[in-house]
Image 1 (cartoon, rainbow, N blue to C red):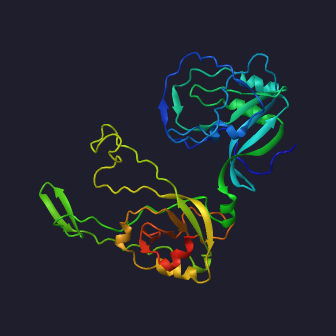
Image 2: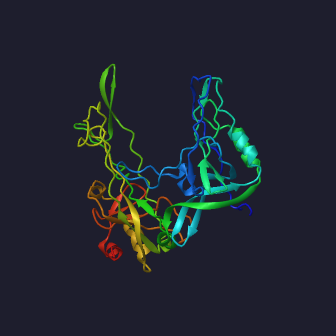
Image 3: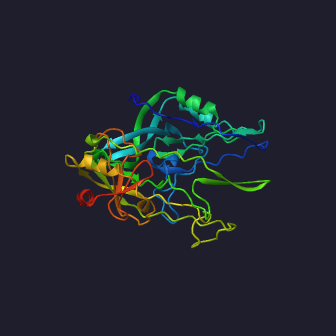
Length: 381
């Protein structure tokens, strides 16, 4: 069986070097634990780097993998399987899935086993790079259908030994395939040309100023050795008009149901602004703090001819300060994409509108305009 022609990312991926840090090393490396052997073949969908950390109190979405380690006595591998991170995805009738690249080797495994048996390195210069390594799971399987996760030999800094990867990549590949991991976009959202998840803009009223008692908005207060001086401020630059789509490109509205809000983090116990649950967020008094309102795709509504022009006309009106400050929570909202269904999805639609709550049209300039009822009504379903 041959290799996939798809371009993928495999093996240990080194991310940008961030910093260096000193560390002390022991002169001897502790022995690796013996790997836990389980019944059945490897499952790359349960690979450790495929997990999503559950919310506090939530049950894990998958059982933990078996303990990785050295090859137990009496376990004779007949194949090796690597589960590697990849940017590729898998489409099927259910939608679009994130994926792992599963690569299988069956020949010359003695070379791999010898590389895995190399002891961990010790000693070194005492300096470790603070880069991050994404280490793929490596499974070994036996002829009787049992599997184990192999531990990679590591350097004194905890990085995998490059030689092990070199040996593995030099072997002849038996098979490569993409394995589904998690659904990232439903078939309905994919066919509609809508993102599976969306959020309301939170940078509202970015052009507003704070008024200090006794001081005109265009003045600035400076403190120096001579005392306090009030001088005229440099006039603020006018806000750029919002970027608006071409009305002819607006042919549908993607409707989203608002997700329950995440709990606000409590202030640290040593915070001067309160502590513990019920004290609110850790932001200082007077700090503008807005949580992001996100939603999950519910349906798509086709727009009749001429609606696009009316939407853009409404969005081009002057922003309404009262709506910018409105804090009523919407239960549903729409995005108005300006791309063809099936094209790459933009992360930031130019127009978003609330179907209830404050009933606003939200634009790229941080402004808010009333969403006309004659446009909002047909979108509520």
